[in-house]
Image (cartoon, rainbow, N blue to C red; front, side, top):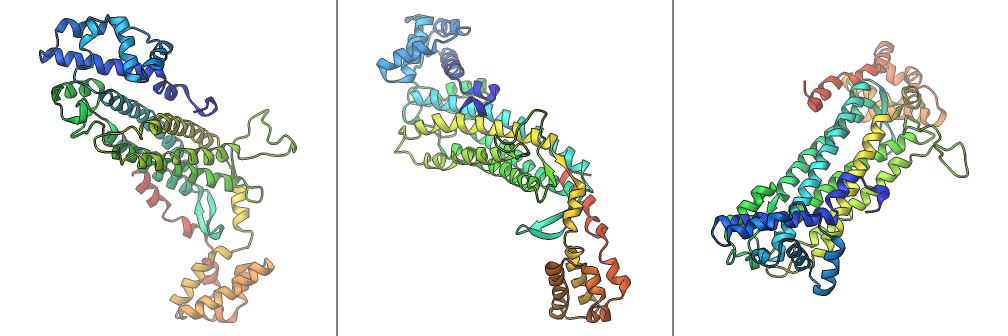
Length: 434
């Protein structure tokens, strides 16, 4: 992933240095377990740990791989250069490359998941704070982009909070699913390596043993992990789209913070563009782009092939780094987002009283008017407001059919905004707890 959309902590997980360090730990812990079982001499296992403070030379490993055309062999050769060829002769005993590669990948994905979980928790805190702040800030709800009925800005933030809270559960589940390791040897039978070695290595790396592997860890786990990232990216875009709409000039109910010295356009000095949330929409597309390749990786030939390998070398870093950056950006947007309550009320009243049409409809039916007749009575008055920008309540009061069923006082009561916010506390209790 390009530096523009990367943060150091997540990038570090995917660096060659980190990868080779994990490979080393897998091999060293495996040697310990084999020594405990009496498979290899204890002194050879201890000799491997002489490299525990070594900074593995990435360029040297690449140089060896240019000859061997095999990355794990290149690493093992370089490790022997530090440990000594005699001392290192039992390294990788009974193991196969996928034991190292797959276990390492899952270590990296669990570490990435830990960062993403922390990111989610930070975003949830920001959403909760803004929800409480604007719990009773009235705004118009929209369906199909058209004014529907009043809601509150706090409820908007609260529904985003609830969505991200579900994503937090999904991310924790995805982490648990991917946190497996395999040290089962060629075709996964443990013929040349004892299952206790796998148990020991997994315990040391914070994983659990894969119940049954072939020569690889089953890729349905990875498909589920990346699918979860895709769902979360879609939720990020869901929030970003709402903010982008709110910042439109003719809406202007909310906006991204515009910092001192910021420029919106090279040509038009007046511009304040929602560039951060537009960027989030684009980043979400890139994260979702990893989902289909991850699913296609599930079907491998027999006990293994490497058609999945090139895919995972790209989508592992790219999807997690991109999502981490997107979380940080969205949390910043929510924290600093500008809210314009006056514009919300002005927008809602652009067609005066029109958004109360359902209350009048229901009142007429409760007064004995058939639903069909009530709908017709309300709609004909509503259309006058659409066409002439008149006042809906005044149109109703001037309609003899309406006033025959409802008194002026009853009509007036149907325009009380508090009717639409009376259950906000109930919804907040459901979302945030009592």
